[in-house]
Length: 240
Image 1 (spheres, rainbow, N blue to C red):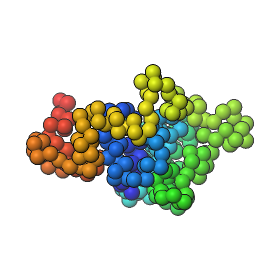
Image 2: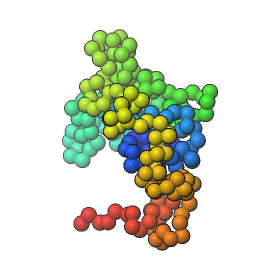
Image 3: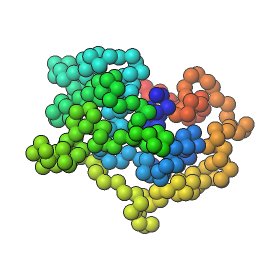
C-alpha cells in the first residue's frame, strides 16, 4: 500500500518539467506507467486532485489501523474545536469537503467497495480500474463529477465545478510555442537529459546508482520517495 501512496503522491505533486528524472525513475520502478503518456499521469484538474487527496487520506487512515468510527470522529464537523479539521473547505457542505469525502472513502474502503490495488492506472491490463465518476459514486456522491448524476439531482453542473482551479487538462493539444508543450515519455527523457547533463546520468539516476564522488550521505533515517537516504546537502535546514 505504501508504494501505491507514493505513486499517488507523485501524481499530485511532481507536476513540473523539473521532475522529469523522478518520473523516469518511477517508470523504471513501476513499468505499468508506460501505459499512459507522461503528462497524462499529472493530477492537474480539480477532480483528479481532489480524488487523489481523498484516496491518500483514506489509505493513510488504514495504515494507522483506524476504524471508520475513529476516522469519522477525527474528521467530524465541529466548529467548537478551534483546531479541528472541519476548517478544511468549511464554505462547502460537509459531504463535499475533503474531510467528509475522506471519511466516506475510508468507510467504503473498509467495506471492500474499493481497494488500493484497484485504483485507476495502477493495475495490470484486464484488472478493474476506477474512473473519477465511478470512485465518487462508490463513496456516495456521484454528482460530484458526473454530469448525468448532477442532472438527476436537478443540479445545473457537477459539484466539482464549484471549486476553483483547472477543469480541463489535455497536454497533447499544447502547441510547440506553449511552455507546457512536451507531454510524451520521449519529452520526459529529453527534459531529464537537459537537467542531469547526459543520457548516462539519466540512466544511472533511473537505476538508483550513486557515483562514488558524490558527497557522503549521513543516514539519519530520512528517506526520499524511493526509500533511499537523503544526502545531507539536500535536506532542508531548520526554519527557526
